[in-house]
Image (cartoon, rainbow, N blue to C red; front, side, top):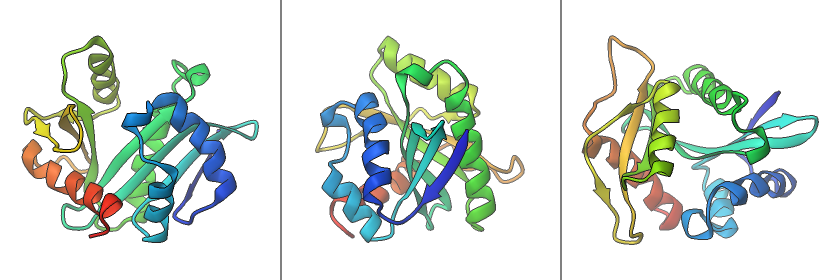
Length: 184
């Protein structure tokens, strides 16, 4: 599997990654192309792609939060036809290694997961736990979407772990969303 990252907008790469992105996230749960392109233009995100036989089978969008010293995983998606084959685990391993080796201040990874008690959300949380993430108790409500969320985190160093305070972790996530949508 070929793993690549870019922090520059590339129409061809995004068009291929976008197919995986659209398959995984409903329209109301994903950022519009214009917003993603603007994030690249502002230098606030990195696109990660995994190719198999020149076809993108997984993608992720991430952003480093220097205040929290965490890499926010905004989206991670694996083609349905490639799920259940360890691709998601490989994606997290690659993102982990990339962040640890490329971002000197990075102390770990943070994601947000939907908090509603459904089988689909429980399955997602189980995946994240299997790849090393810890679930926090705090439930975040946003004014612009009806869903509630919880933070999950993955510390790089057990001696200096990230906080398990979900409210604190959401500061990094919310900061990223504000930059993506409002440009702060």
